[in-house]
Length: 311
Image: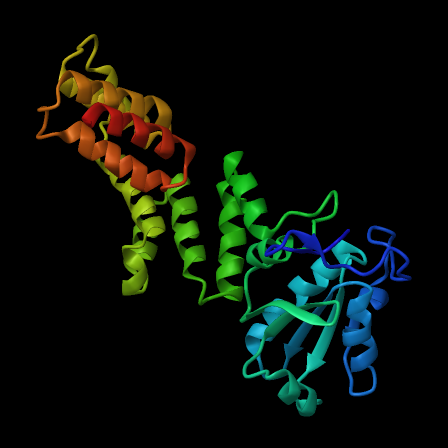
């Protein structure tokens, strides 16, 4: 499993004749997780990186974020089974090494290969972000386990909002500074019908995050649910096919999560009666794009259709 430099696309791992543990060969924790000392730094980090990549984690006992990051890196080191070595440096015990490396704050993680520093990050990144960062250089092994975020999304996809809620609540406790988890939790609560709890989280976000695209999306979903007619009211419309009835059916579809049919109905209404509700169909389309996010396939598709209709 070669490490790849994204700048050149070339492998960075050592020669094929390396005696390093073969990735996937069942490496033990003792083989892939090493505590760095003055005596073994040269061998483990510098010489060792000539054989396989080394992830150098600098930490301290007083550092709370370090405690959150530690199990994530240990899990990945074991999971990758020899694709890299996790070298842990206690900066309190070995301040000389930390000084030579220019460590100014912890946690600090450096990726070293062929004796060179190729990338680094500071702070306790959530597991999903560490996986993404590591994945730029080292291919994930077959059968890699899911991150907590992936497990939450899988649970949500099956309608198990209780499990997704529990996962995000735990992530918020571990990473209170990662505001996106609070927004994710608001989305889960909304999916589970806990509208006021979701609103309370959104209203309590730091000011600089309240109007961020992700928060706007969840708030838009909340508002769609509040504005849409109930299913009984939709059924009471009967065979009506006027603009008002078409708009209300589209809003109900969106509130129920049937975004594609809702977007299609809004686009058709806009084409048939642009003046309805002072351009209500176009405004609703833009709000749905906000709710889905700019990169969602439906947003990309229907934004293109909207643009073609307008121009």
